[in-house]
Amino acid sequence: MLDMELIRKDREAVATALAKRLDPAEVNRVLDEIQRLDQERRALITGIDAERQRRKAEARAYAAAKRAGTEPEVSAPEAGRKQLAELEAELDEVQSRLRGAMSELPNLPADDVVAGGKEANRVVKTFGEPPVIEKVRDHVELSRALGLVDHERGVKLGGSGFWMYTGLGAQLEWALVNWLIEQNIKAGYEFLLPPHLLLDTAGFAAGQFPKFYDDVYHLDRESAPRGQFLLPTAETAILGAYQDEILDTAALPLKRFAYTPCYRREAAGSHSDERGTVRGHQFNKVEIFQFTLPEQADAALESMVGHVESLVERLGLHHQTSLLAAGDASAAMRKTLDIEVWMPSTGKYKEVSSVSWGGDYQARRAAIRYREPGGKQTRFVHTLNGSALATSRLFPAILEQFQQPDGSVLVPQVLRDRLGTDRLTPRR
Image (cartoon, rainbow, N blue to C red):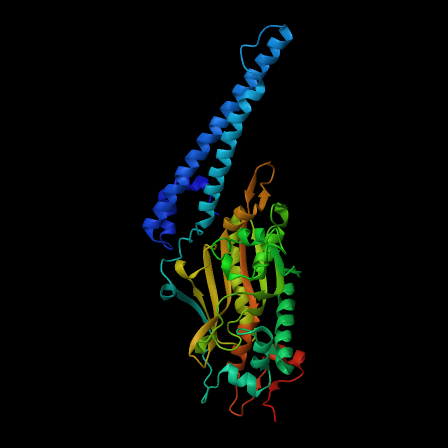
């Protein structure tokens, strides 16, 4: 959520930044409404304060007259309660409408983030070269030939958009997860295993609700009166775990990570570059997260991007890093860099991690603060998150980039001890 004070003081700068993501006319319409509601709210607060002061004065005068045995010149205190209650109800309604309008606004893109969609993304780093493969087979064909993924039984179990890892495929997936867990611990992140069912408050705090409310799986209200949903990413859980807390300033940056399956209602891929395990309703992901002081955020973002790049490099995968344009990044983030692996079968890069800096946008929604040293005042922390990594896309990238002419697939060096082999071979 944006800072209301910033909108009051520098509306033009806010409008210019938001115009990187939204139609300028729509931006101005929403800001007009927000400022109108803000003025109405402040006027009501002033009126309520004045009414309370008036009632206190009248109550004192009424009590004094009663003690003196004279006839009070003012009515009994109960008489003004109705008017005050009406003002307070009106204030509640205005504040609710203001909060709703504010919650719909996306974050302000960073200064170096350009306007536009995917076409405006900029590659900032490349690792290695695309492998030279004479006859490329895609990961779906390879996984079937090698007995690694059972797509048909996955659909039988969960419907379209689901799959089931089998044999060495299940071992490869689990080896990736465990290797990533070990590497993130070595990088100084504390390991969490959060619940997979979260309260709606966690979705709002992360900036996913209300705009993307329909993109996740919800429990019905009869089963979950407070509102619960299956987490779409561990980012939501890690952030939500610290809602309404004042963090120890000396402990910042606070570095956490979690492994979870992720559950999403997005359409399962049918295009050639989204087949197999590339896009589905359930997939595994390891997520890193940092809570920082504002002045620590730049260094944290650089560190997180470097860490994720190093993981993909150690797996030996050709990839690139792209700075996303405002229209292609998450609405809750100020700046996002995608790490994208090369998929030989499509001749395209596919994102395996988005590393993002949210500024204080999520912290405002979640009320996560720190106390300035030597003072009583609190300020909002900055939040950063990144996949480290999404295995459902690493898996096909490994199969495609390391495929051999004889139909086998080489296992990345760092995973060979875990699988007990250096090569995946076709079933006989």
